Length: 132
Image (cartoon, rainbow, N blue to C red):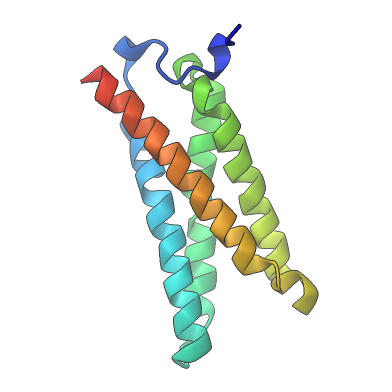
């Protein structure tokens, strides 16, 4: 039996809040920007400051996605993915603040975070397309 709490197509008449939709769209772009900025810092001689700043700003869509999936009943189907993204984001910050051994896992975790954010974006867009 399928649990309805994981169904992202429930209550389509209630729509998806614009801030939730735009957070789901913005997060993968920000993470991709992180990869670009890290590459520029490693190979282009640029500062790591922008990488850190964008990483800190990425907390905003992560918080919106997790809070929205918790607060709005019709968005609870996104809860598992939003929680995974929040957990990976926290781990990413901890890995970035750690020593060389922890930093070795930082790019791998970033790839997982990007993948999870793209899956959530797909699910949010799928819900939006069914509502139209």
